[in-house]
Image (cartoon, rainbow, N blue to C red):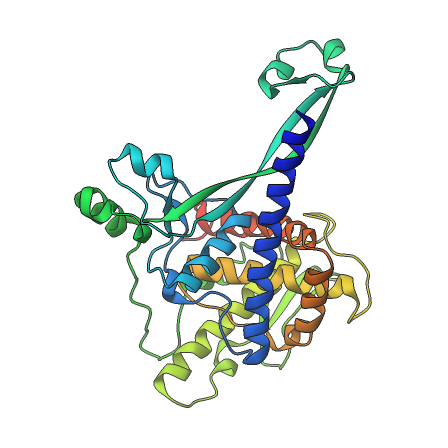
Length: 337
């Protein structure tokens, strides 16, 4: 029994290492030409299974990277069992993507395991005889393009894709990308702290005043081609999401920020949390984000931390998940038109 648990734990550790390797390669690509987007449009839409259930944010990022590496158009996945249940098969030689999840393990003082439901039904006195601890586990999924679902269930697949992966018209009259949800967040001042647009050269979140200051949108427009002007609008919103993420870390909210000097490992870690949260939220809102100028200096630091401890990424993504959830709540729950 102990050997079986050990093998499962080792499997989860291999998955974490695989995730870390994917992230290391992405950062190396960005470092080689750092204007590259964190997430490209090749994996348009939010990763989900064919029932419409989205994957948690830790897995989202790596399913995006998996789609880009394999050139999949849609981030839609199924397990082998689900594909077989729909009368389909997984293509020979297809590579699966692991999906991580936490499960609560319950063990008595003498080593006996029970389910979490059994534990919850025990009295408080009986529960004291048990220990609970989270265990990282995983299962494997396949992209629908690596199955024959499109052939055996064409109507189901076509209907699902048309409902969940409609590409919006993004261009506006001024040529710069515009995002109504984020614009409304500023105009209504409905974020967790004030967001001020000022004609100056810095974007920052101040812990002292608990406020965000951004350059005005037009300052991001440096001219050039039509495409460059359009992307300049995306840069503005990317910067906005980056600073919004920092503000979620205040002591009155997620209590993530610490008084650390500029350039320290802790400071670099917070920059990675802000970068990945902005990338995830930008992609959900319909645009791509690139590594911020101020964060580019930390690329080597991130590679070093990831190489030394793969679990570093799990802890970062846990913070990304919480920050993204806070941003989603303010954008998606009716607080923003």
